[in-house]
Image 1 (cartoon, rainbow, N blue to C red):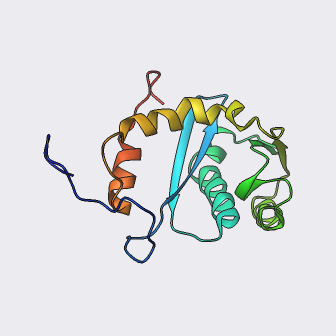
Image 2 (image 1 turned 120 degrees about the horizontal axis):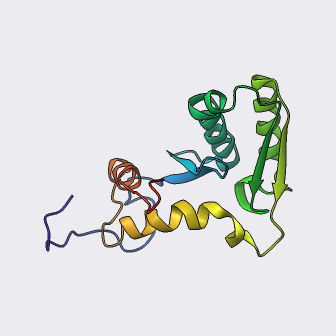
Length: 155
């Protein structure tokens, strides 16, 4: 990271051939426990990466916190990588169901209401404020900026 007051030269526009690659953050927010996890990946198959993020949450946090769970319920926006019409999302989610041995129910927010998703307010807004003025120039920087983010409630 740069010293205080020192500007750093960065690419202003999205020229993939000049960049270090794209970082895709995917967040999991447990509303019942006010806990969250952000997975940062490089995958071009975003639906596969989204399900892999859910898998990692389950393996690292979920199964320990919910040992008696008989299923998972996921609330997600209706478009993009985890959209209701995305066949890749459905296929990868079924693979996760087969792996963990319990059903997963997905509730999609109606179109135009993705900002109802509590993760936007509880986690990503704080992440955005934390890296304000600090360019995410490489994966290490992105991970450090996300990892050092704290919310008022300690999330």
